[in-house]
Length: 341
Figure (cartoon, rainbow, N blue to C red):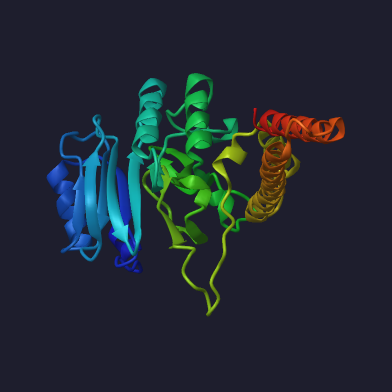
């Protein structure tokens, strides 16, 4: 099935992540070689029949580093794509909750900084109606650890960015023994809020019946938003780190996201509109901060000049004018400090 599905894939621009193949490591390598004979492989050879993970990479990609997780549930590679370093992680998360919590912590440490794509079988169930198979509902400590990963590393689900009218969670049918279940779509996430990605073009999945409970997913992602498009250079507003830590900004960002209903017909539109609101607010706050900073700088210069003019022969009016300027400067500095507290 995999070979039939991959016949239409151009491996010069595609990375194939495979998980949950219950075969020996060398058997998995031979199967990958049957798809792409000259390809590069990242495989965990230690897990015997426990649902292996593997990455298949075209030989034209420059591999900077690679590895597998300690428990063998993930394979990762870092590639040089143009001027960017892009990391890719293929995951087959454990079925049990405690090992899965350790898996999310490992992922958070791995993708600490930089451009990462995280994909595979996360074994997560967010809706009670989706609870098919052994995976328990996402809640408790696992939910806290997962949300911490999503918020701190700003990983975005490609289903929310691509133009789907309704986010697919389960699709088609899979046969498990005599019972017919719905097959679960694997997930694809992108780090840094997709800021380093031009756009997610499309999401496709294999259209036939499967013997397992998963459906292959193909996500097309356009990289490098700084590339000129049709003769025009794109310009991007860079948020100030100091601005994002401000409590007023955090409150406004939270309000904006809550106002944009996640159940709207086009998730991509919601994401773009909300992000535009956040950037607009932060830009105004940053301009206001720059204005205050400029006023403080001018006042300091004016106070220094007036102090140099003060002598023993200066009148009370002149001295009072300097004291008034100093008081105005202190108030402005206090206002600036309170804003960033």
